[in-house]
Length: 620
Image (tube, rainbow, N blue to C red; front, top):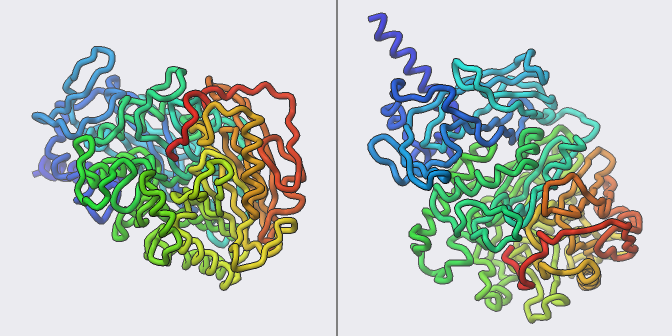
């Protein structure tokens, strides 16, 4: 009887530890049919076939994300192999794994692995404030994602995982909770990224805020990976595996794992808590509600591509993303919902949107550009879907009502108009895969801001592989003076890519790039600065009185290095709802400033990894 009670107690403890690993229910706690069957996992839980600690490795570092005032998500991977799980090839309780050294499949036990984790207020991990145990297995690619709780607001913590009953430990990570919603904080620093394409260069931009220790959190606006074949990249020895267009669950797992070998990405993930959202390439190029650009028969609801249906491909991509990213489960009652809000003290609300995957109407699929141009202002088109759009407006109003100083909106694609006819010389001058293709959605957003008199709104955008800084303007509805900024309702900061190439020509020279920027600035009244040439990132430093934005360019991404060039700096004063004049202090390092000058310092620049290849327009 005593043995039976002991066994039942151990089983209950193991069950709780399985549930504690959020990835078994990914991407939703309340829709278990989309996750992994714990009954099947328990059935295979044979201690006799388990791994010894010496067989296991923390293969891809540690990460933290989605910080709250009292908790934070912690992530790691502990596995007997660096390769990823092939969930669709399960035989007799074992999973064949491909060994790239011996070029053969080997059978790996599916026995679960037990890990402990601890969170401390000091780097030596002597003042422990939170602990826990979780199990992982091949079912979830040996990933571990837990919520560490009982934490204090706006506090830096250090954390570590270890294999249960052993000294096999992970690297030590650093995480930071957010302030409580009513807390007053002096300032918050954010590093903002998008579009990291592995074969085109090293992710130096991720590492520089680590080396400077210059921000509190990282915001990633998507295109964390690219799903396409990698061999078209620069010849610098960085091919993302598998080297093909990816479709299966294994493919997406392996692609993310390859990206997570970049040392600067590992450093950023271990040093800062990330707040992330996907763009299109986490699934496929130019995704929309029903399909993507590579599936031209968009009226067909079940199209096979790569042997995987449209629906299955998206499910594979989403599952791998949630397994590998330190992101919280968001309720699935709103379909593939990743949109969410973070109230960071009384200083700001960070509103993260999904303008790609959730419920957007058909986009520019390259072959239908003329058609999308014709319907781009149709009131029935939606970028976010009605539920997300209404949620977004409610978040803006609630933020203003609670008197948060700022509303910062993280979204994937450029919000402001992008008239690019000067560059492409075609009859469809706008980017119809961005907000320009959904003008009714943009007008409704601007109408809400203007009519509700919602002040201090800042859009953050990625995707374009270029830098754009604009006053936020409802053109043709409200008068606007580009000299003073009068009539603006906010500001947009759109950043360039970490490594993804410039779409205006990968071999473009610096002077030609700046000429293109000047033409773009002239063609768009609200656009105050634009840069085509540099890969990089930008930082936001937010206080109650102002926001400063500093853009940094990477002079060389052909190898790992800490070099960066300060390209331009901007400020926004509270209550002014426009860029402070003179914009960027009247001078920038690169690109074109509407009413200022470009002054280039004597810097040796080599971005050949970002500029190799042909001059055709790239899929963004």
